[in-house]
Amino acid sequence: MPLHVPPAPAPALRSVLAALGSPTAVRDARTPALQSVQGPLSPELPLPVHVLDHVTPEDRTTTAGSGAPRTRLTGWRFLIRSGERTVAAADTMPTADGWTFSRFFEGPYLPSTERALRQAESLTTAYQPRLLSIPELYMLALWLHGDTEADAGAGAPAPTDILVPLAPAPPGIAAHRPHRVAELLPVIGLRLTPPPPLPSAPPLPPATPLTPAPPLLRTPA
Image 1 (cartoon, rainbow, N blue to C red):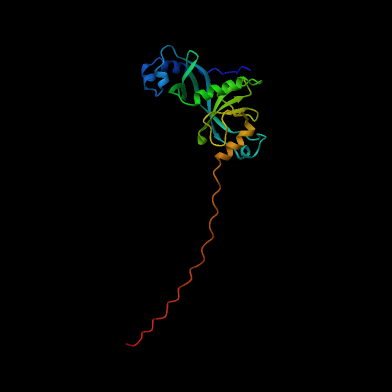
Image 2: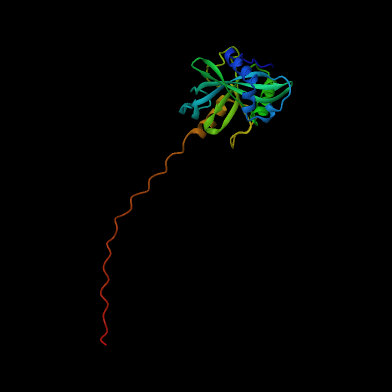
């Protein structure tokens, strides 16, 4: 089923278009694929980027989703395409005056994002696609939000939403295996929980005073 891709804020899109039209911005980007392209470039498939700020104890211990994780919007990401080929991505970030261009980049998350979007389009339920970042785990996931009419810049993952970890995923979490939030969030919460402190060692018993050795007897010469 087609995804309901939310529209990006107009200032965010304008900032990316301005960066694409700036030879300096493109030249300074460490993106060989973007620099080598001949022909027009277009920003497409805007996705809001949310960061998982906190997982409550309830989120870590229940699969019913009784708790709500806290997330915040940190930017919008655009896939930069040359014809039918994705050559880079562009990030924007919020400012006091609206939105501004942040960076161009490339890497494994680009093809992984496209693959996850194709997976989502094969589902029988309509979703609103977002990106969810878990910085402590160096993890990024495609977040499929069930409320397709929701404000893409707000809200938290619902228990029935779907997360598709992108590659490379952290050890023990399979990339491109869709999970309900209620299933994957406890696993993420356990990873984010610091291990309990080691029990303190019992105090040492008081030292036993040493008895001085008797003097050696001298044999007369």
